[in-house]
Length: 350
Ligand SMILES: [Zn+2]
Ligand SMILES: [Zn+2]
Image (cartoon, rainbow, N blue to C red; front, side, top):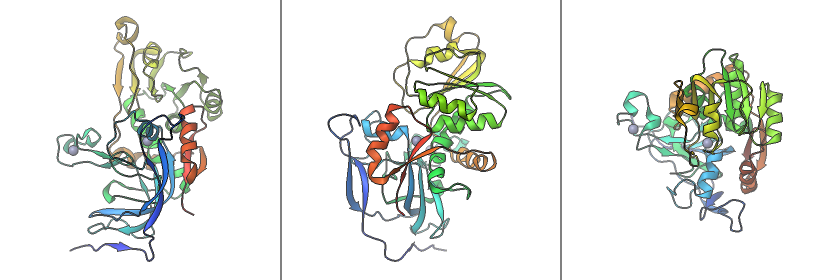
């Protein structure tokens, strides 16, 4: 049986979108992002197209915009926490109907045949592609994606609140699992933006004690309001030895201090796709006593489905700051400053 392409009537042919012109500092003299008019894309075989309703602003968008991550696609449109309504489906795309609300995340495609894909570790697939890096993302009015990598979004989340679940939430959840926290254990979170504030809620819902270490005074205050046991500077030692910790800030200098703050047998997970260099470590102070140091690479689709189910069942409530679509550059500057309450989200469409 063949599945025909479908589309809503009267789709426009052009749209507004942001694109990275030449990567560079978002707060420098030359703007690395431009707000442009470009053609509305067409979904290919197995793809859906959504009208974007909201798109989260993730720290990774800043890495793409500033050039911390190599250019994979010239003039790429950033954005990979996309909530949208299906307005067209390509040939052989039958999973969603026109009008469905779906989420398009960071992981855009994996090959399905390499040793990692075939062993439940598609996040390590060497052929993987990413939304808003390898392919245009959601700082746009319309975006396409392979249907098999999209998610249905729990109804109780509105468009703005749902957006940060799609990367901050899912990657935070994978980091949380990689950090191997014992039941009722003590978890340290270094950096407290979009991802950490959702991860903190999962941990506390499971009876864990959360300690936050971050540079921003407002972010520390927010952490305490959410129920963190303590909040202090990013380079401080935690008030108690931690069973596990996750570094969300892209700052390698924090690693030795975070390892020092771990209890014997503890685990430190590095959640980011980019980290500045890690200074040299002292075996006795940082690694001995069977401490574990690990990184987190993206996520697989099982992490995404599990997390969205948990987010629906637990009382997860992302804190968001909405920005108008044409203020994406301003939102990125705010993310860069780091003193943030939850996550910034672009409000796109009506
Ligand atoms: Zn693969
Ligand atoms: Zn992200």
